[in-house]
Image (cartoon, rainbow over all chains, first blue to last red):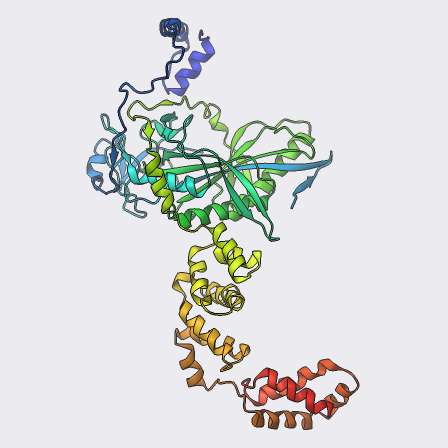
Length: 96
Length: 485
């Protein structure tokens, strides 16, 4: 698989990273190199091997009891907000 | 029941599927220990996990999993003992992680069915495609400031069960019935409170149209934000007409997300979402696959309550109720329980009539739910006993019932205090009958000429004279006897 310029532009948009038009070609090359490198994995014969979706196998997901043990810390939650209004995060208007 | 829209080029049918987002009843959130209670101060019920602070790790709430499994069992669905949480990536101001933890390829619940009870008493099965668990986003408030949006993360991380139907729905009525039934089942199960105003039950509708006779599905539009039974029906009607217009004027329907405007009853395109469907799902590396024990699932299954369909069948079988009456009574668990308590050891059909007509009507006027009824099930039962043993007539019972609604008093006490006991003393009734016949020369002549209906006039006179307390059957018998003589 190789990316074209449009795909690079789309990926950048999805990641909300602003890329100057002139940098797209260079990034296309870099990304295609990475993809080519990862694609080497396809050479391994994985016939009959179950896909592994997490880095630790054979473990059960730990669970929590349904109890309120957290929250009630708005000062911590809001500490890094660039802008506040009352107890809300205030962000540039989202129009929809 | 079919719903056909006549266009200029022929007849069209509607194909719909519903996505219901049900907030699972729990104390804490899906992946954190913050409370999910509604109505807290902004950003009060937010842990650092819910605010997506770097380094925070999600740990799943076991009870939320139990609720999802319970719901799946209630929908007659397959429970997947192995399911996987994935990240659904998109940017929005009220989604601090930049992705929603959801399930995609391996949901916790697979295919199931819901049975609809339609207006004409018939039923129809709608397939369930899947149920998966996911986090809710925070809340954006757009109308408090002209240039800024305010974000409250209290809802962020709350456990949602997204229930996706198959595209089996063919009419707006079926869509409405589906949503009502889903709400009813969830409330019976105790897995979601079904409160649509507070947003604990939300709905998106997928709508497409096709010519009658076509078997393939055409392109669908997803209509968001249709949060009442009425709006779901309106949105489908409007969206179907819009799509038919597009096709008939030579255009093509595009797959897109549309927003329902309940004020105008219309849908409109959310154009800014051109890449929105590119969610780049991948398994969440912070969460191991969820593995359930079959014995644990069986244990949950053993705790399921009697659900509306089973209850409806039992009411029809054991009490001889019609499908319609049984359907009305079981829609809310509280109503069904009230009815059963009032009907216990009595004429069940009569009890059903009182609950469906008199009680529901009176509560509706007062804006009360059945749980807040001033007349208890035991009270209504006593009233029915008073009718049965002849203490009061059905007509007087309505009067007593009104007094019960007002005061919450015992029916016997009301009958006693207001002197409403039925007059069964034939002598007293006879006197009133004689007086009525004497006063109605004209009417007597009409009766003798063959106008049987005029007897109502005499009954009215007797009732007036006895304050409505005369036993109607005795009055009728006496009148017919005397008028014939």
